[in-house]
Length: 261
Image 1 (cartoon, rainbow, N blue to C red):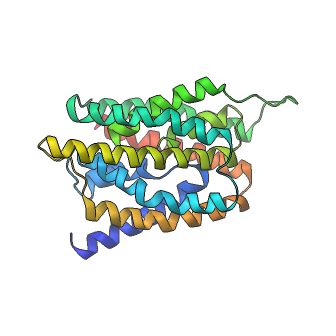
Image 2 (image 1 turned 180 degrees about the vertical axis):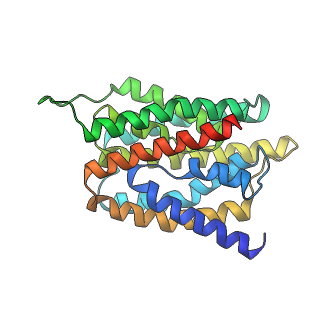
Image 3 (image 1 turned 180 degrees about the horizontal axis):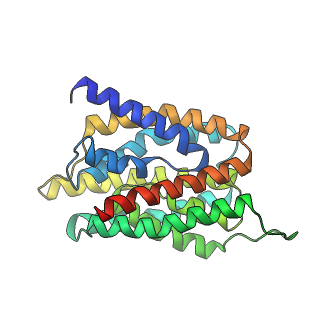
C-alpha cells in the first residue's frame, strides 16, 4: 500500500470517529462505501477490513468511556452478549450465501431515513408528557442486538448506527447508549474478524482483510474515537440526539442513492 493511501485512510478514520463516537457509532458504516468506491477493496474482503478498523479504533473511545465510569451499566452486557452469536452467523452467511449488497443498502435506507427523521422531530418538538418513557425490555434489547450482530457480521458495520437511534428513541439517554453500543461493536468485531480469519484458511477468494488499509483507518479511528468520547460530556443531550438523528438520515440517504444507482 502506498503511503498516500495509508495517510488518506488514517485521516478518513480519524474524522469519521470524532463525529460518530459521541453517539455510539463506530464509523465503520460510513467507511464501507468509501472502502468500496474510493479504496477499491474487493468483496467480501471489505467486510473483515471494516471489522479490523473497529478492532483497532474501538479501544480509543472505550478507554475514555471507561475512565468516566460509563461501561458498567446492564445495557453493555445485554448488547454484547446478544450480538456475539449474531456476528458469527453473519460471517458464515457472508461467505456461503451472500445477500445482494443492493438489497442491503435499500433496506438500511428504508430503516434509517424515517428513524433518523423521527428522532430529530421528537427531539426538537418533544411530546408534552411529565412521565418518562420506559426503555425497551431486556429481552427485546438482546433480540435487537442479535439481529444487528448478524448484519454486522455480513457487512462489517457497527451496530451502534442501528441500535443507537432505536434505543435513544425509546427513551434511553445518549450518554448510556453510546458506550454500550461501542462496547458491543468492539466485541463483535473481534469475534467477527477471527471468524473471517478462520474462514480464509479453508476457503479461497478475497476473504482476508486488507491489513494495511484496515490498520491505517483503525489508527485514525483510535485517535478520533478518544477525542470524540472526550467531547461527549461537554455536549448537550439535545445536540447529541439531533446529531444521532442526522447521522441516521445521512446514512439512509447515502445508501438509498447507492442502492438505486
